[in-house]
Length: 115
Length: 110
Image 1: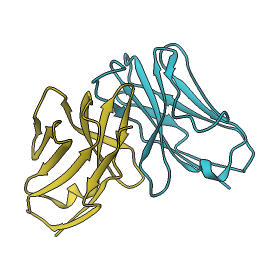
Image 2: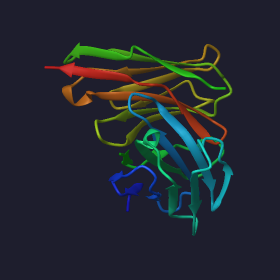
Image 3: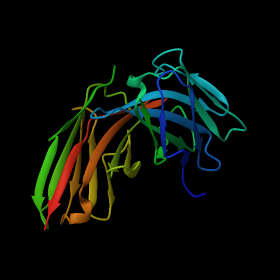
Image 4: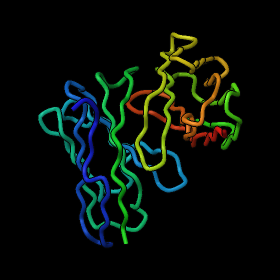
């Protein structure tokens, strides 16, 4: 597709369950990013991929959060044993190059609600 | 640690008015400054990207400036329209990530 896509668009889960969020970046973009936006707060950086490697995981809030990228394309963000404070919109972005001045393009996000 | 602040937090203007949104950042060692708009329930749309070596960028009715020495950027919207109503976010690009401000919520009234 022409832009960044994410699925699902909405996810409701029960506390303690695991969830997987998917991101399909723009074709040919080498860098991929995950951010989250909790209600009433700004966007927070979670993790950055260059190719299939994640040189910056500094924003992951706990070891319940993990992410992978395969084929220098699709990325999956996994949250284990979800907590209510994990409720947020999770946004994925991609850029042509990473680690520098490339413009980032964002997907529509996945709204996660943990009951 | 980079911190980004946006003023005002909210703004309501009549249609046709020219307006300025402000963004300040604490660390001048940024690669770029990116402006986005966010519509309710939707993702971010990139509006303008200013590289650290540039002073301004223009796209249609939008003009963004960057002054690294003072740690400021402004987004100028000319002849505002109701369709411009959205939240506007600025973000400083450094290293491997963008650091976002909390946004200015703009409402353009008929």
